Length: 361
Ligand SMILES: [Ca+2]
Ligand SMILES: [Ca+2]
View (cartoon, helix red, strand yellow):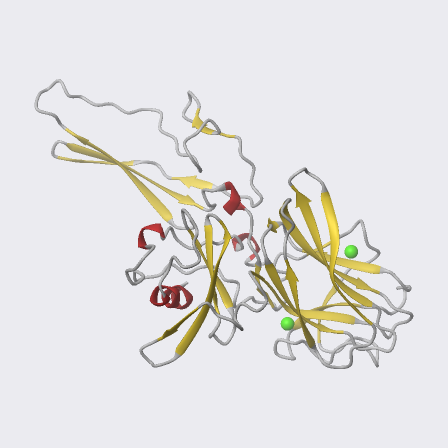
């Protein structure tokens, strides 16, 4: 996905003049060849499936070339979604620094060299890029809720306006941006501000969050899951609460999410709650949501020594049956690389291939 596909129709003349071949009414559709995905009489796609991520398919005018007795019709289309309904849901969230430019927005680059051969080679279908719609978003897909809370989070750099509360600068570089709740007037005790992610496929996730809660009357920061269940109901759960003054420094929290069996999709919500007075600003920065366990890189599943004699370590897993992921642990900043596969097995790729994925995707 994200790349281009060329379809060739090749016709080869038979032994006699009575071998004419004809084709007509060609359309392309995403997904399997079943009743949900077919062309109507006008050659237009009848699509009945819904998507979590908006997508477009661009079809170019077919080019026809004739060489001797062989006629080739080529159609190129750019597929910007994956082919599997499961894969239309995002899985996790790349690191969000809230900076004006997102240097690590994780749009995959097209690799110019092929990965090293090995087990699973035939299953390499290209990088998985569920985050592309959010690549230019300063908020990385986090949304302010407007109905269920009393105010909004503020994107800010440098110190906050009041003394005795808030961080001196952001966590990423001290000169960058972060999000915070401003607790000065007109805010009142227990006013809440919610930030929420897009919906993701329900699997294990680790939320890695830096926060600053400095102020004698700091209120509460909560991490919640918003789960859509298979029966259509939505449930809200608290995953973590931090309350009261936590000192002047930025702190890190890692929050493990494990979905119940009947969860289909999940979003995550950060709730900032105002304390007794203005000395309760709460800031967050450098947030990532990675699939798998929080200790994945502390206990890597694979390792590899490259030709510079550097030890690389990886932790692999299946976000679901059709999506393999590798957490690349030895880089200065942990990253996650996704591969669309037919039947996920966390040991399906060799360490040299994992190393290639981490360095080229
Ligand atoms: Ca930042
Ligand atoms: Ca709000």
